[in-house]
Picture 1 (cartoon, rainbow, N blue to C red):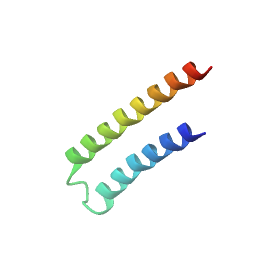
Picture 2: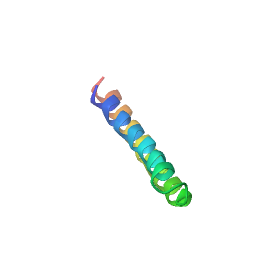
Picture 3: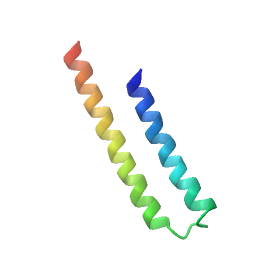
Picture 4: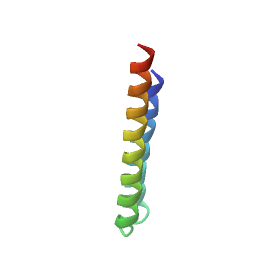
Length: 59
């Protein structure tokens, strides 16, 4: 269950970056927000792949 929690945390961080960009910065920092979202997506993908591999090894 902790893998799901980690992925939800990354998903919430992506939404938080978008919400902050729209509400606080009026969309002026779109490039930085996209860069952060891409980094979070790559981190989430890496986390998923690592947890999937560890799950297969434990089986």
